[in-house]
Image 1: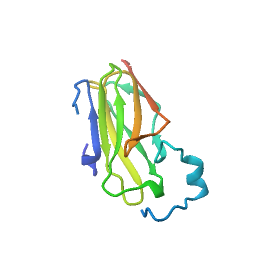
Image 2: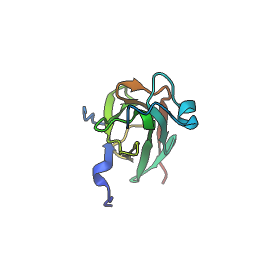
Image 3: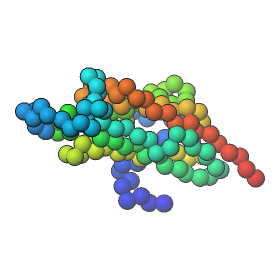
Length: 143
């Protein structure tokens, strides 16, 4: 299966890849509610909190969100520290659009993706978001 944005898809398997205007100080009420002193990330979502992998099936998980408009700076990527079930950590990098949006698609497949808990902790310009997301991956063996 060929994906239109194949360059935006990260394949996860058991092998570690080792992988505004600053003069405008006003922010909207919505941004003020979501902003804290340690974060520039307005929203951070993951499309699934659990995957039940079926034999020979591929599934995709989308991580997306927004940077607070007043905190966006051109050229800075969003980074997500992903901790795999075996404790190995990977840094995922996402380009942030001029509208402050970011997105990455992760590919999980039955034969190569580890089962267990994955955690995702976003950072933007070295500021951590207080909300870490989790994904549980399990495999079903049906006849």
